[in-house]
Length: 112
Image: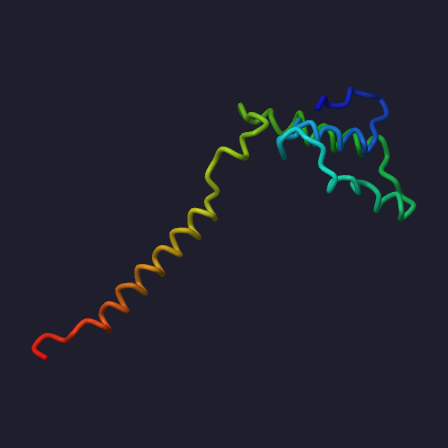
């Protein structure tokens, strides 16, 4: 999926195209129907986003995001999340504590 071209008057559809093309690094390049309502709440409220605000959003979602390092668009899918690792460690620790506790309760006492 190709990203939309640059424009002097960008639209929300162009921002959605940036996301769908994988340019923002949020997801793999493919059509995402769940992103279709992007901007519709603003339009329904009678305050559609201005081309300037869409241009700023496109800039920060694409150019500004990648200037801090050598990120690849799929970098989010190839790294460990600290919260997940901590949660898995917690679950393992609880499992070990329960296993040792059950073993100690069921083990016969010495001399009985």
